[in-house]
Length: 123
Image (spheres, rainbow, N blue to C red):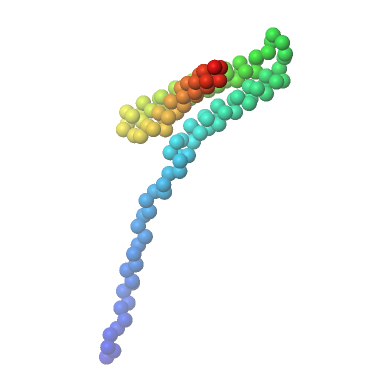
């Protein structure tokens, strides 16, 4: 009789534990929609300048800047209203509403930043 039979039971290996969710990047924590809005706001300025440069001269000038401001105002208003709705729904359901609240604050922060920049540069 053999001394000891080898153990034929499958070896108990440590099953990998489910990893914690990967740490969210800064971009995803801030919100990709918010980043897209900031890129849009930054691109509206050169768009208005380019439209102004190719437009009429004299008393009819200013149309390119006006169109850029109008476009920014419409998009910002819609962005604010949509994010306000998302924030209300998220808060009502007990979910985090950070991205939506940041989205509500961005148009206001841009307007206040431009007013502050104007105040600083005019003096």
